[in-house]
Length: 170
Image (cartoon, rainbow, N blue to C red):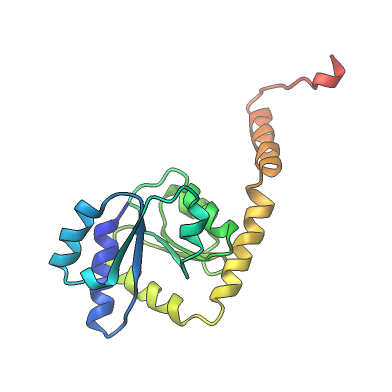
């Protein structure tokens, strides 16, 4: 998930006087804590554990950061955008197909800690951060609701030559 890149970016931010709190949900504390200590950013890291309702975790965030090296889709991006949270992610397959860079969030190169630190600072200083969250919500409504996604799936399968019979016409 690019946690090493994220923590290295936080270390860069710390060295320039920027303060940020990075929250992690789920597991990973045993891997993340030693890395955070090595980079001297353990005071910037908070673990919130598993959440039965991911919206509770997402609602705590100002910005969802997903610096994945590989991400086939990125459901957490959709979940954050549905909660009107802007997203910062890498230009790997999933995120780059969901996020409209500069409008619904931000995209950076994979494994680029300098770009990630710079973009996190820009996001913190962005007066339109709330607008990006709202634009992300609108994108979710127009692209990722079950009816919209289902329609697009049927269109794609039809292009591939799959034919569907309407149950009502049988």
